[in-house]
Length: 508
Ligand code: NAP
Image (cartoon, rainbow, N blue to C red; front, top):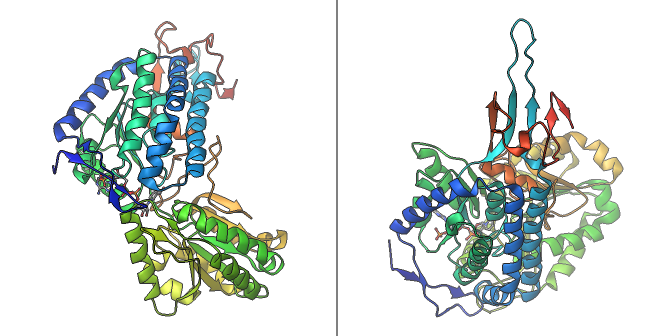
């Protein structure tokens, strides 16, 4: 492995932040995972109420360090303070939601099929099922959500809520933020008298570190948010292990938007306004950024494009998260600019400042879109490709799309009925389908799905946002013929936790 320390860069100045962070060694990876395995034996035995109390203590400890976290995070990511305040609240809010889930207790999906000793021709045994935690989990945070999808983000918290222990490989571009977030969790563990190794942080800026972690035989699952190349590399490594493990990688998406003809004619101005805002939000650095917009070349399309142009020209540039993200954005834009039959239709205000990006929209026709594969790939940043289609081509759109986190359909009631088969086909390609709304702004709720078919994720049956995210780090186990005293409380006849259960096929 390279140097035993690393630094990160302030993206606003392009200068090194003069703080050295120790680079974890391969030996430390091994030690951490062994400790996480031992801690799992104790932690998995804690009740849901004890785990909920731990999560609530993490919130207290995060709040104690809030000022330090936000100030270093601002330095390391250039994200505005207001945005970081909001993301901090989202982070503590999602921890609180998982604590509520544990206090309610019913998420374990308890199912009881009672014995039928008199059943003919053979008696039926007593069978009881519930979800149990998998074991030590490796978590990789994203650069674009340094709080909500990072060290104390949704993956870590849902794994800890499930009863798993966690080893985080933090994102190398916000090591100071990661350290403070980890300190809050470690403080909470100590205050709750839980083993230190329930949560551990590994810092470093080499792929080797993450690769070793995923391949460690005692790691039982992986949570990842970031690039397609990173997620797929870790997924492949996990599948090559003697014991393959699930990798829940949430990667990129172009989040197609389809604007149907009636609504374009009647509401084009409003749609243009929302689109300009959604594409430029957070300098386009959201995995739900609407990077592809199909609109019907019909009455209203000229007005829609004129309004979009006017609005985009007023959008200021802003600093991206890192020199590498800004560099990749420039490469993506250059490729679009060099593409025949594709033109830039509108741009935001330019800036010479370090790592600044401006919002930009390109336009092409459907045949060109269909003939060039990379036009359906994500360019991470405030850019979107408008594709003009005829009414006849609308039904062909789903065939041109790979798996996505989201798709948005704009239509009036008549449009929606007329194109309901296309909408249904698109539904089968995405994790979340939106009517008359934009994909940015992922609510953290029970019903949210932030996932979708490959290549948006490597595990189509899961979500990384919302309470259902806890299921990723669990598996069902069936207890056959267990006596009452041996059963977990969740499955005992007298239901001491008073949770909702399915008994002989009926939810009670
Ligand atoms: P990233 O480069 O994939 O990094 C995420 C984490 O994975 C980091 O800890 C990184 O650390 C590690 N990693 C990356 N490649 C690896 C490999 N081959 N082997 C082992 N570990 C690896 O993601 P990012 O820096 O957050 O963003 C870069 C790109 O990801 C963006 O341009 C965008 O396209 C996409 N993105 C998607 C989402 C989303 O929510 N889906 C969010 C953010 C970004 P090391 O580099 O130290 O190994």
